[in-house]
Length: 400
Image 1 (spheres, helix red, strand yellow):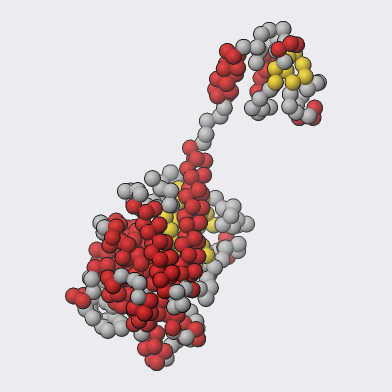
Image 2 (tube, one colour):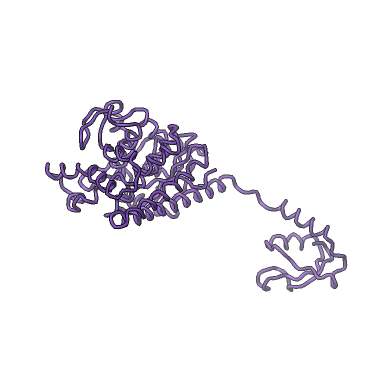
């Protein structure tokens, strides 16, 4: 486009500063104004132009447009990628929970279908996990607590277990068996009466004893289904056992608890502490880590516990933290390369999860001072946030 070209604008007369939609360009200033309109195409009419319309002129325009185009803001680019990763992880998590819910509905009436549904889901998850050799960022998905917490708990334990197992060097086959076991380790809880599982008061001794039989219930249901690999049975039966013999249902010690079961036991305990039963106290991830670490080497495999902390980060997704500039934030995803500098969502007055500002602490000057609880954050900042949301974990399935 040059001085002398006759053009026709694809705009209404109120959308540009010229007298007419069609006119001959008289000077360079008009070309500058035309470029500022942001149009991808402008029609040039050769028969009314005083100079020839050439391909060279079109190419020059494209080059000028590229030169004038503002460069993308790197900060905006990583934020967009973070949001995309968060969205993909959230979608993958909900799909996984939904498929698992459907599989459990078939468990007693159509056990073969239930097995193949779970087997397919597990393999899909592992294919996504192992397509990248890098350590995965873990994202949090915030879901309402409900009577279906067994689905969220099972998927959480399965996803976290295989993330940790991969980082520990478990083979894909070992991860497959671990993931299947984690998916159905608590299926026996469905035989525990609702009034016990959802009871707000402390359990009686009889209720406690009945609940502690659920690993045996799980094994019975799995055996009855008849399709699941036998290798998962010890993991399911012993996931509440402890190295020192203080667990249940049989009180066995370390020599009778294989390595995958030791890992499953740690992840299950961590998830239960952060999202407990109705009559138990909810802990922050840091409180859960601290409590578990007190028993590292006695009740829990210390190496596996440390790898869990390494996988989720010092401040796991879903944690509330205070920053050194006085702000409060929620951790949204871990940062495998810089574990003290995760991506966080600022808790600000009038904001919600949908429109809050997000910071990548590896790119910002702010630092985390400490982990905090909901009741330590000023109410004016948490007005639009629900403290009862359950933290659910997944990784970005598109990570290369």
